[in-house]
Length: 101
Image (cartoon, rainbow, N blue to C red; front, top):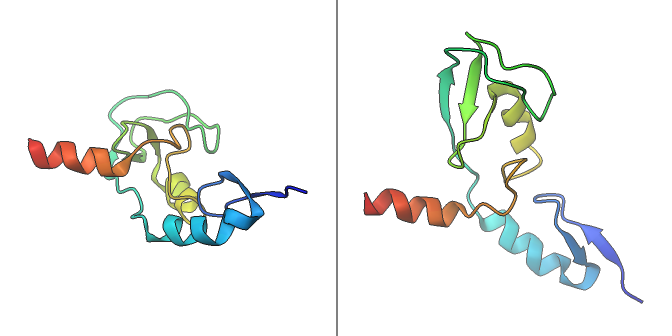
């Protein structure tokens, strides 16, 4: 019988037998960092809280260029280590591109 569980770090679904190794790998990955800024103009919706991103609010821009309320992404990162919209975004690839420029 196969038991599927969800990783509490990245939300990936796994076979329960693979969970311990996956957790060790997941916990060793760095958290995504972001640039903090003040939004210059209205910019759509924060997909975490579903409220509008309004000019003047403090936002966080992730390496994948997604934008969220800073408070929302900080809360999200307490449980997850990935972008809510791009869970497969490779932080390591982003770091390599930065180092090449």
